[in-house]
Amino acid sequence: MKVTANGIQIEVEDSGGEGRPVILLIMGLGMQLIGWPAEFVQALVDGGFRVIRHDNRDIGLSQGFDEAGTGSVIWQGIRQRLGLPVRSAYSLQDMADDALGVLDALGIGRAHVIGASMGGMIAQRLAASAPGRMASLVSIMSSSGARNLPGPRADVTAALLRRPASRTEAALVEHGLKFSRLISSPAFARDERTQADRIARALRRAYRPAGVVRQILAITADNGRADLLSRIESPSLVLHGEADPLVPIACGKDTARRIPGARFVGIPGMGHDLPPPVIEILLQHIVPFLQTAENRS
Image (cartoon, rainbow, N blue to C red; front, top):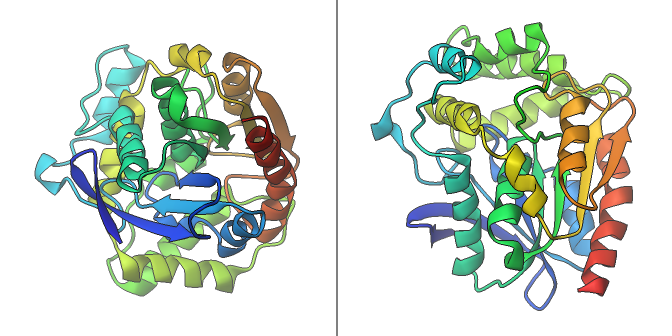
């Protein structure tokens, strides 16, 4: 269903039924709400929660911003390294306000918020700007955005900026597979057919590469988030793969260090993806954390 949130149209999926404590899931760069593995969502529902997912603005079935154009990711990255302002069509705070608007539209006062990658950055901003709406925060494979932190591995950065060979479905799926191989969890078996099917499903639902570029620019422009993390009051859990080549583990450790009372858990052999064995490990930490936070609230 679509709701009006923060003045724009946002696509939402609601699982688990009313009358339960709420979890809001926020996905990462270019990822749609279907990027959350079904087994992860179902485990949270089975744990007694109502689970809300949404497509971030400019991605999936939510409202786009094509009229804003894209600009140059490389040039804006140079400006960032020089300490100059980065131009973006919207900010991560705008996206946090979208998420808050989803809760408003559904009449939800407080929620446990789980964000992955860019979704973790959005969740951090939501926790800092609307503390009264947060039952807890879980930040997965994300970053504080502090300037001194390491960036992606060089080959991962190059692959992120590389264009697909063509816009046929086969070429787009292969392009997605090549990138996913680079960031996958090295300690866990990978099912190429399942991954290809997931990429194809997402492409058929929506293909919006310009939205991905604008989201990259929003991340690049977000240079003040690290200083806000000390304002977070909610119980916080930070989970990060020890083998993450896109967002190195130092980024997760810095996030936890800056959030008062946050607990950090490093996952050996986890990269920047959510294969079934990693999902099982994450749930072993997340479900008890959420239940404890809910009981205390």
